[in-house]
Image (cartoon, rainbow, N blue to C red; front, top):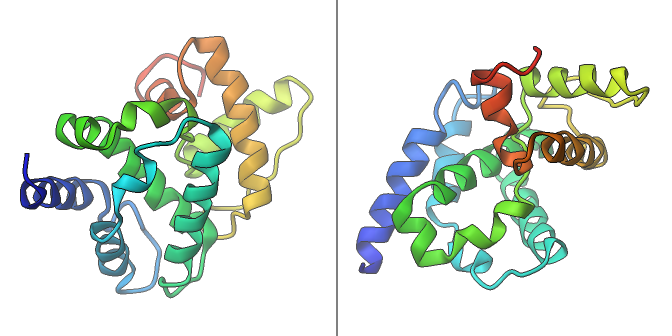
Length: 176
């Protein structure tokens, strides 16, 4: 596979993953700014990652870089876009093979949006755990970290990685 082909595949995944419905309610231009950022994202930065701490360092860096480019300056929106795009990349055979993205699946996060966060909060309450959620635009890194830590435990109960909890929440028979 040549680099031009891979860039075309990456652009296709971006267009599929990041659209108006993904970034609903954001200022005009947010979708195109986000798509452009992701087109320039060098997936090689994830290729040699072996530890979750290494992944999070790179992922947090990219989240902050995107946050500084979008109009809302929302950390939560930036994180959501990166999570969705990387999830698409992991599940694309060409991008996965070229950038060895299988290695980061255990470190990937559940994409947080209103439905997923509310399902996590409901499950947390059942266990006597309090989590904070207002909306994706107001999501802080600290609240996201707590939600993601809890998502890890829920994923473990279901025998999957947390990035795949979305499948259970949206398409499975996990309680809503």
